[in-house]
Length: 135
Image 1 (cartoon, rainbow, N blue to C red):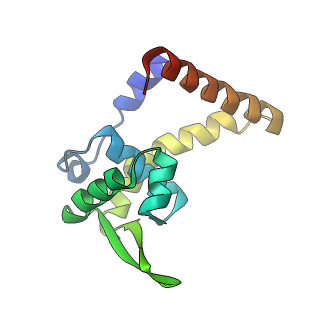
Image 2: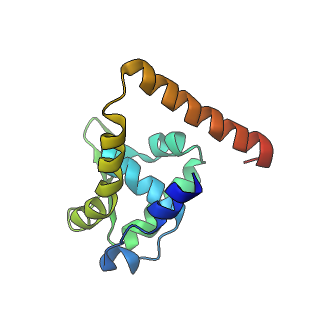
């Protein structure tokens, strides 16, 4: 596990992204938006397991930097949908897609049952860390 994390940390970060001074929490937010598509602040907060105000602050910060944009939800004009800007999407995608491709390649040979075991094992590991160190 430490070797895998160390390798992931050495992935090249495009200069335009590096200059944004992003934290790991920004990376999680960007990965969700890139791979799962636009979402509301509340949906992102739920999936990141943080408060909506935390996501709102991150979205505001990244919006000012030109990374994210907020638009009205056509179905409910009171809601705002968050997405990666068209200008930054290629940079974010080139940065994060290598990791996603590596996961797809590693998981491709697994059967549905083996995938379930793998995901459950990772969830158990995460839970054990939480129990040991708190959140």
